[in-house]
Length: 180
Image (cartoon, rainbow, N blue to C red; front, side):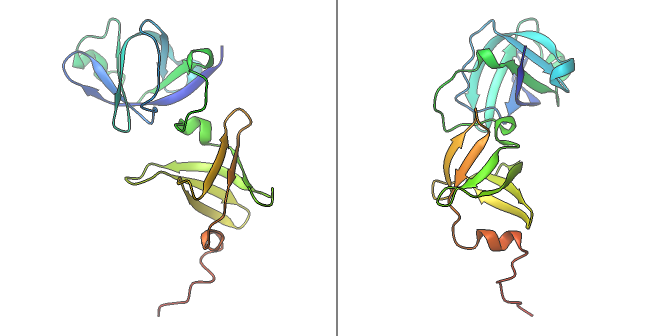
């Protein structure tokens, strides 16, 4: 059984034992009764039966069979939520979990050159930022259509177009004049 991390339980929601799961794509679709695993790692996660799943801003709201009060749901706070790969819907989606993006190889689309790997994801108000680690340093890649051209999750690769100034960020801004 292969489990995939889909988010972290940040807080309870309402009075029925629901929890807010951050990072999970709002388009996540799982049937009621599906087995969800909750724990600090997939290896030690405990199974729970999904009662309901609703989209929320920057995540999803979930409730589980047998957890019906905010107090019982609070015990799950800060734990990871894991789902069997087979349960996740397939298809082309513009929504990705952080776990799917991390460690992806980044390739410059026009040249086919390997640039580095994604090592972090920043959740920002206007658009997310994927941190690309290169031999020269880290580059914050804005997740916008002008930069991110193709995301191939099964092959763990991302094709990008380097817009003006991005490489200079990895080199410490050498081309930026000193303001002193």
